[in-house]
Image (cartoon, rainbow, N blue to C red; front, side, top):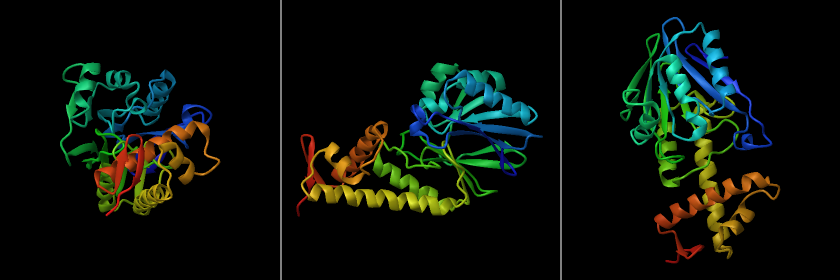
Length: 277
């Protein structure tokens, strides 16, 4: 599938009845650059051999261009699975956030992994570059990549195509969303879900969603709900699927951690109340 002149993707379906429930709309692996020159690959997906085969088959469909690098958005297993097989097949370097480099070097061997610098420009072929933006929040080692030539952001798991993202550190995450908003992308290419054509509007939509969720958490606390489970029940839909409830609870905890850090709520053991004064 060709998305823009220099962006191609292979879409991998996932079972919505199992782990695929966390990735509505499946997963995209991107090939960026000029197939007649050289390209880079963004992420490597799950470790399943069938996934690796689909990626390699798509590489053949593109005419087997030289792959100059595999760019990693972050170190979660569904983004670096099969990385050893792809790196060996392509004979290329892997680029990633400095905090992820030691783990990937241990996996792939010395000399095969090179740290990215913040806002470093990486050539992708055909005279097109991707700029690396450190975007922690979903994970501490998260990187988004921006192609200014076509106003495309490869957002990894910071922004998804068909759902909201889970967040490890909400304060960092909100700052990262502001960075992406400042790029004013036309197109977002997420790790999971559909390609987003109204990129900038979607980023601002994510910011509004998190702000509204924070207000809902505060309202639940003000009403006397003090447990994470109680807040999930208060702010999420009644028909929330059981296999998504754990993710909802984690998101609530990130909101509580941010509010606590900002001094807007106080914590007493495992319960929270609205800060007074």
